[in-house]
Image 1 (cartoon, rainbow, N blue to C red):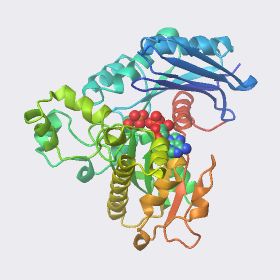
Image 2 (image 1 turned 90 degrees about the vertical axis):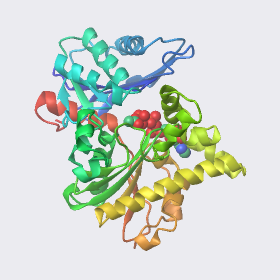
Image 3 (image 1 turned 180 degrees about the horizontal axis):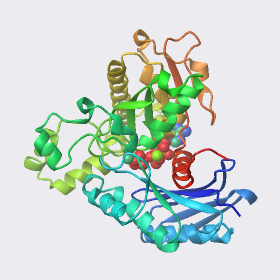
Image 4 (image 1 turned 180 degrees about the vertical axis):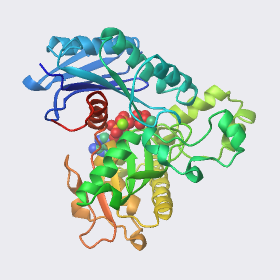
Length: 405
Ligand SMILES: Nc1ncnc2c1ncn2[C@@H]1O[C@H](COP(=O)(O)OP(=O)(O)O)[C@@H](O)[C@H]1O
Ligand SMILES: CC(=O)OP(=O)(O)O
Ligand SMILES: [Mg+2]
């Protein structure tokens, strides 16, 4: 039996998402999610696609190691376990790869050491990614494990965009620079946007707006990233579900000196209790829109701040690129929230940007244009598929080709 399947693991700070993908035809025999890891109310939802069976497990799952073992057991019940000869490799999303990793990388001890060294700049993400890799290796030591880095796509950024305006000696000593994240999604979506326009990626300039719980924008010139909104960590840039995005760095000194908060408290405050959640108590855009429609002022302000920041980045990346062929909305909010898309480009007709109300209201899983037919710049909804991109890159590395054979 040939090995054509890739298990993709996306370990977040309190969740593990997984998909088993068959590279022969792109089918997904199984997929699932473990959420609220470390709490009493953890939940595993597993879907075995062949028989449409979805199983749910509720109850505490202490850590990422236990989560991954539970996932392996669920896959095993469907005959799709980690011992399956059809499994070619496991592809892991790793959030921070620093400057070192510019490509998908076969995991060995040195790679693990380097990912570990990057924990201080990705404290919410890299530890979970590491545990995922280590647990998977222990369960199936002979299987190739590939790390696919969120930062890799952004390593093409010019120094003018990647450096902060601080002494380069200090910056280099502490590896302080703008790395950018969600790169797997920005790469996939910019390519799919070119495809939607019937062009080669090398011919088009695209602004990608990845609006999920974490959110980031990128400027992609002829298939290469030239700027992105996240920086040293995934805190910079857009307003997010629970992260503040851009602020004057002096806010931190002020909160410490005047507010009496510790560095760790400020870190938690800005990463976990700010953004939409900090502004109005909700981080889910559906709930925020519902409240806006009911006339809730706090939700309205949160929405307006979110949109104002988004619009500023569209303008900034328009200037960075000089010529823009398309603006692509993706991820949970970008794919599903027509009001966000409409508000983000409202008033930008001068830049050739507009949204057609009827097209914007259409829902669906396919990439689609939402700009009027005569628009100078295409505005598109392009569903992201980080799992397929990770599987493709993983399979290409272990097999010498990314083609679906
Ligand atoms: N129908 C919808 N309308 C508006 N927002 C939505 C909708 N569906 C999902 N979302 C938003 O998508 C967010 C999650 O996006 P997602 O890309 O799945 O995030 P992540 O991968 O970062 O967890 C949710 O917080 C929610 O606000
Ligand atoms: C890097 C990052 O922000 O990831 P996520 O959106 O999964 O939190
Ligand atoms: Mg996401």
